[in-house]
Structure formats: C-alpha cells, structure tokens
Image (cartoon, rainbow, N blue to C red):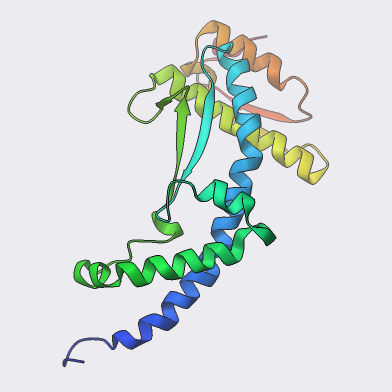
Length: 193
C-alpha cells in the first residue's frame, strides 16, 4: 500500500456488508415491484381507458433477468442475490478503484416504466406521465389497503389540473370508494363533482 492510499484489503469486508444488506434490499424491491405490477397496470387502464398497457421492470446492475432468476430461487432468492452481488463487486473492483466509486449494487438500480413495448422515459407524453404517476399512487394505495387491512388516507395533490376532462372524471370515479381522500387544487373547477 502506497503512502496516502487506503488499505484496499478492507474492501472485502465492505463488499460482504454490501452483499448482505444489498440482497435484503433487492429482495424487498423485487417483491414490491411484483406486488405493484398488476395494480399499476389496472389503474393505468382505468385512467387511460386501456389505450396502452403500463409495465414495471426492475433494471439491475446484476443483469436483465434478475427478477425471473430470483422468482425461481428458493428462500426468496436472498442467497442468490448475495452471491451475485459478491461476484459483481469482485469483477468490477479494478474499474471501481480506477473511477473512485461503486458501480454495482442496489444504489445503481432503477425501475423502468413502459407503455406497451415503449419505455415511458423519454417517449411518454405529458398526460401519459401524469397518468402513470397517478397509477403508481393508486396502486400503492390499493397495496397498502390490502396489506394493512384498513383504508389509508389517499392524497391527490393538484393532480386534476394536469388531466383532461375525461381522465378527471374517471379518476374521481376511481377514488369514490376510498374512506379518506385529501384533494388539493389551485382551481376549484378542476375537481369533478
């Protein structure tokens, strides 16, 4: 070890911690994405009248088919995820040291949202993006409602202004069954009766 340089032998310990904690985080994210996928798809079709199908995909630094591999692995795939994280950090160590940052792990992952076969990022219109955001909010609400066994408060913060009249009406119909809905709007006329 050169003077002024850290001792890279300690990286093995840090990599092990990243793999252990990262595997738990990844497993939780993949479980959540699986639970949200159908409700997001359903909510988007209701808001947009089924013009496109919304999809959620987990984009991991550990590979494209991670969700499928974990779904087939025993015990929720945590051991598989931990092993994959350790392998990836080992493989990328030289590049990471050269660049001075960690290139693999859950902190580098993302969720890709699509409309049909087209990624929403960069291609979805303003209205489609708002509809997707609403779908994620409504899907989260439904998931919490089923998991908690009660009705959480649904907050819709100035969403009606960005929707056309038809989508406003459909959204209002969709949330009528909620026990508590907090709606904010800059213009009162934006909120359907």
